[in-house]
Image 1: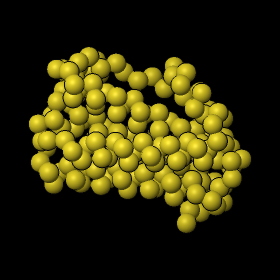
Image 2: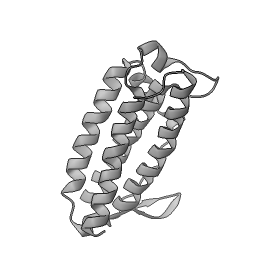
Image 3: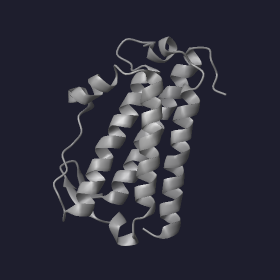
Image 4: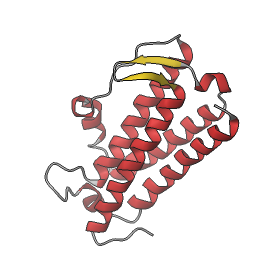
Length: 161
């Protein structure tokens, strides 16, 4: 990956973290924890999910950077006991931890050489799985959930600032 493409991707992750914060700001714990429809995550649970996925993906990246073509296990959110533990924390703690971890991840990725972006792993669902692919996947996955956060916030009648 060339330096310009890497900077664009990192800028996207930086901006998406700001958007997660913006869509959560100014709401009470009760509002953030409200499940507006059965079976649909609350804003708080969406924050928790994004943070948890970020943790899992950061570990995968370190694995690909430290080993040659390691086997990457699929992530199953519904089977993740850590998500359940995390979701019991106050939303403000989840959000600040997500943002702090994002800053650490961005700093780590900022220092990667072009060849490191192409370090690969073996994933059963994706034939070409690299550090670059993992980060692009994360950005698209996160964008989907940011849209859901926007919808949840709109249903609260509290437009973001």
